[in-house]
Image (cartoon, rainbow, N blue to C red; front, side):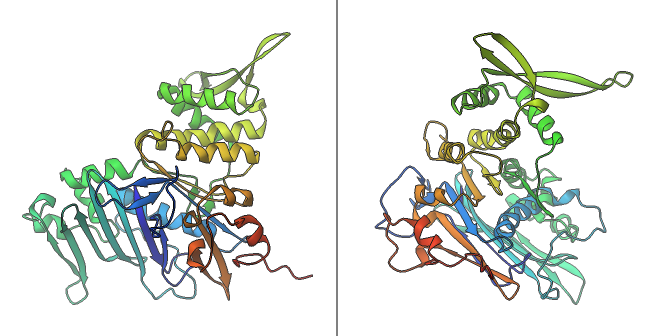
Length: 398
């Protein structure tokens, strides 16, 4: 579980933004949205919603976590001399960006800190906490020598400093160490690379036919989640009794193939099969979205979903998010961070689960609903937000 993450000088944000999944108030009533840390009994939210006007920075918050997860686990895929795809605020290009994350996995709380610019990692460190806090590694760029100084425990390869200090400048030390089979690094990457996101460096990864095929391929290989997907689509009244997934050839000579989903429909007149290309767009989106949500629920990671309401009925969105509150569908305390303009969802959440994004003078900021004094758990958050009590509304000029 993610306890919190923060970032500064990223996309439209300059000052530090802290996205805290923990429930700070001791007075907050227990509810199905909360899970308890196995380390320190902290209560952690399983869902966090980001609300705000268009272009306020909602997607940037989601991108920050997506970028950090990618950099930690997969930055080794960058070419040797390639710049880091950081996307700092355009008014602060000469300022480093800073990321922090506190995440619980493998029986520890891991605290990772990263100071970075387009060219290199300036500084990064990793701690783990159980009974006490232990430094795993600290990596610092030394300008006077154009090289890194690395301190690391033996378990992280500390006895082979040459290996760690030779890490490429555009790669996280965790991703680097995993290439040399250092167990801690491999375990963290195995766990953290299971996160799912529908945002990329340029924003929302809009639905396309390729996503439909990728989802079909996933469900073809994951039978248990395919059964869960079919059950949910039946429950949510998409008119399907089943989904069949069949291989299709693109080039018979090269035997290239992809997988096409077909919806099975039953009626009084009989049963017929329809390729998903002819199903409603809402059906296609739900099918694709479940290929991201169900793996997360299975492995206890996090889904990062931008504009979750796209092409889906509000009742379906409530059901989809509700999967994370249910102990039956979410036994491993998976989490979801999502943005939405479906504002009625606010009244289904606790005040500690709602963040607002707002932009002033081309700089975004974010704050949590329970940062406001006097917000009650039984308030109508939707009505008060629409009335302008919490800010983060579009300022429409008549």
